[in-house]
Image (cartoon, rainbow, N blue to C red; front, side):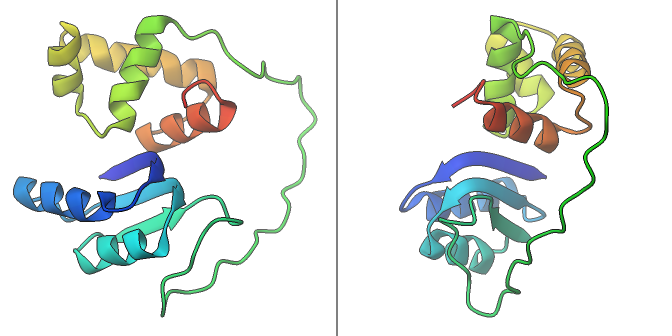
Length: 149
């Protein structure tokens, strides 16, 4: 499972580990835009498989963890520019918010009064609009584009 959050605040790592432990979920990787070193250490010592803070200016390294290496710049493809902010409906943004919170299609459907299949359909349509592959990439793309705070 991949959990994507904008910011992991003080004490939230402990709460997350506790909640995941109750659910019996340990095969988890956390992607965060910002996270304090203490929270990353708490997550990793609590059994998560990995934790990544995406903002390198604010990222603090965990002792013993490999240092991040800046990737080589990728060649820029020559193509029509994609729209900066694709048209997403309020319902699609609501579904994305719940996906970002780590909810399953069934749980999202229960919260919004939809079937899990309808939620899956919404996610497929959003993925086509954004050109993404999986849930983590979908949420990360939406956060980076500013469509979801």
